[in-house]
Amino acid sequence: MTDFVLRLLRLDRRVIFLLIAVATLLPLLYPVSLPIRVSPEVQRVYDYMEKLPAGSLMLLSMDFEPGGKPELYPMAVALLRHAFQKNIKVLGMTLWPAGAGIAEIAFTEVAREKGKEKGVDYVFLGYAPGDASAVISMGQDFHAAFPADYYGTKTADIPLLQKVRSLRDMQYVMSLSVGFPGIDTWYVYGKEKYGFELGGGCTAVSAPRFYPLLDTGQINGLLGGLRGAAEYEVLLGVKGKAMAGMAAQSATHFVIIFLIIVCNALYFLTGQARGRQR
Amino acid sequence: MSAEVVIGAWVAVGLSLCMYSFLYKDNPFFKFGEHVFVGVSVGYLLTITYYQVMTNKLYIPMTQQGKRWLLVPAFLGLLLLARFIPSIAWLSRISFAFLLGISSGLAIPRQISSFILKQVEGTLKPLVTVGDGGVAWMTWAGLNALLVLIGVVSVLFYFFFSLEHTGTVRRIARVGIYFLMVSFGAAFGYTVMARMSLLIGRFDELMLYASASYGYATPVLLVAMIVGLWWWERGQERKT
Image (cartoon, rainbow over all chains, first blue to last red; front, side, top):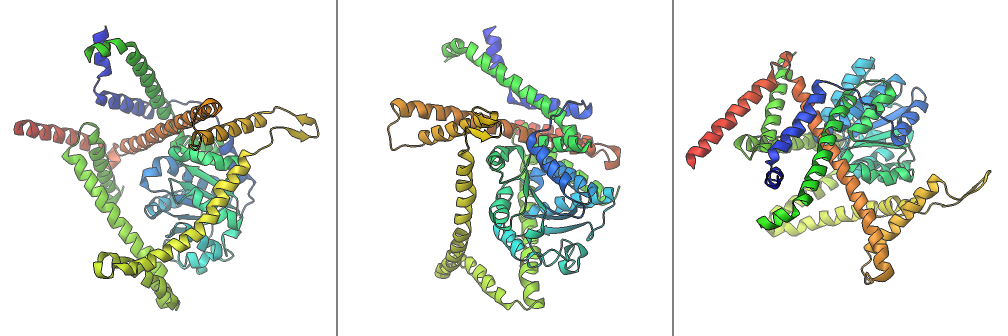
């Protein structure tokens, strides 16, 4: 028995990879609906968006690159759907050079789905280089920070941007951030000085870092990881990519928890035997 | 489905499988994927920087909007490159001094205000609240505030090294360790969640590209990868 347990503890790690792969794949192939409870921080973002009157200006900064796509792209899609449903005008941009392509796809696809017109209902400005200085520059003179949009159209000629002078004109700013620059940059160099309301979305890795900002009201809400995106989809009543992924997430978590408990129990149970082998 | 979309799907699937092949062991497919990633990233970054910074922020404003003063930051930027020529490397210090001065001036007051003063304000919340209904001694909000206060103070004690950690100081520092352990646990839990989300995202796309409309990219390339790994493994065995 002890030999068997010891052999189990020396199991090839590739077996664990395989278990995780199966636990991820099965719920994606055979979707299971699990209940998703909406957390207060996600509810606050949704409620704030709900209260914004039609025609309000929202800036969605998609501060991520392909590495953050699985978690942050569903958030962007859900937020854009909500904004377009409420006839909120959206300005899109990114502080990450590799994020422009993904962000542009999100804007184009959701705008097409909701029948929104470029330049009138939304504008995609593309990548703003300079991290903090980009935010400061947008606060001082929006048109100087973005002389042209992502497609090369002069921002002075875009109808939606005719009345936009600075970040002070934004009713809401959301940063979907995979790291720095991201939510911190928007808070430190933007909200503090220009006084707009700020919400955040982030990868699960960085979520614990932003809870103190939530507690002090520095950000009004937070969407953390794929779960945050799924909660937003629940509020919207739309079954999107995030909700589809939650069953797989639960299954993999279950496997990991099971393995941690079993391996620890076996490790302590075989303490003496391991000592003898040494 | 347009040809470029299908080609894109095949490239995405091929490179994803190359990267995942590392889970089996380090192999030429993984190395190929790794090198392609580094090359493409640098190329993409250079192109974006050229168009978004050099063209949009420098060339167009200077030539079409008459902003000649942009020559000054452009010149400072060029001075940074002086580091590569040892005889004039000292010139780059001018630009570094400028960058350092500007960034410190911008960052220090903002960071202190945002992450120290505001956070201290958030830590010092009233434990007892007085409202229309009288004095509320122990509410959930009060309990949270108390926990935050105990956590902050005890962790600060743990990182206070000017006093020997004995007696009361040791006991308070010990409480700090428990708070730190809980925070590390939460951070690790979130990290696992994030990594699994990445896996789910990748699998989701691999499943999408497994369909007929993408030319069965995933199953075809998966089989090709397995055969390739088997062939490479045989080659390795022969060598040994």
